[in-house]
Image (cartoon, helix red, strand yellow):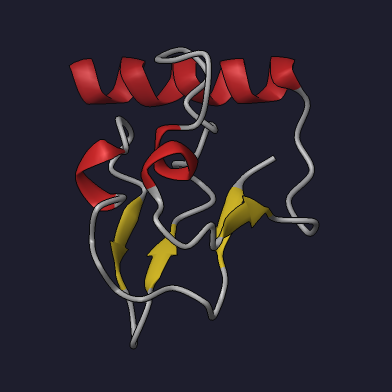
Amino acid sequence: MALIINGDCINCAVCEPECPNSAISAGDGIFVINPDRCTECVGHYEESQCIDVCPVDCITIDPDRTESAEQLQEKFNRLTASDAA
């Protein structure tokens, strides 16, 4: 599953540097998560780093982007292979 940032975001930017996949960026008034790059930190950490640092708890699982742990691991493998190339 990819994560999503909801409208409660206060645009504080603490999540952006914590994302090991560079999936978080400034959007129109709130930060956004690129679901094609979000692995919920699978392959990097035990827990999603953006959720851990968010001061307003506005980052949740995106119900429209359901992915299994195996799919997230495959996405991590693809991202790290293409980043290394």
